[in-house]
Length: 170
Image 1 (cartoon, helix red, strand yellow):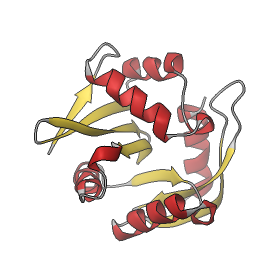
Image 2 (cartoon, helix red, strand yellow):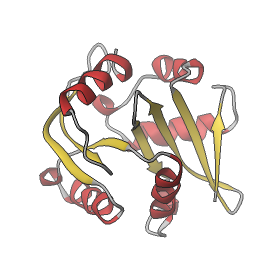
Image 3 (cartoon, rainbow, N blue to C red):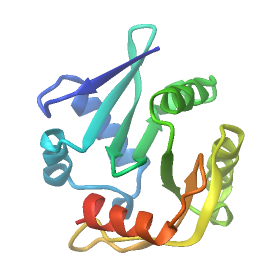
Image 4 (tube, rainbow, N blue to C red):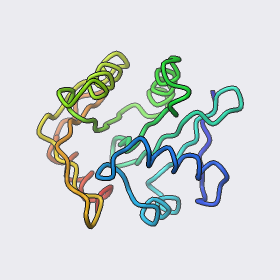
């Protein structure tokens, strides 16, 4: 498996990533193209294309924050799901980023949410906040009640959330 940082919105993989991003994540859980494309020039952000057997199988959008990494989006494309590739990707994350935080839909929202929560639990993440609210991604988009998960125990959860709000969702 290869993990290649994409540094330009003109990269040929970006259209495939954006198309899947838009079909997988609901409107309120994602950035519009104009906001997403600005991430390529943000020094705190890495947009990583995940390749397996020379095929682009998914991507990560991660933020390197003060003393942890925030995974904003993590997707394995639909045709490559249920092949244990997501577990390989979390292995990569753990090897390269020792302190990771991410947000997910609460498991009671449906079978997909329950499956995702189970996946993250199996892969070393624990629930650290059930009262987290993802701010709106912009005009016409709603804030969302989500859960925060991490692979460690943050010392000050309020500071972590404030940093995510101030930097990721500014």
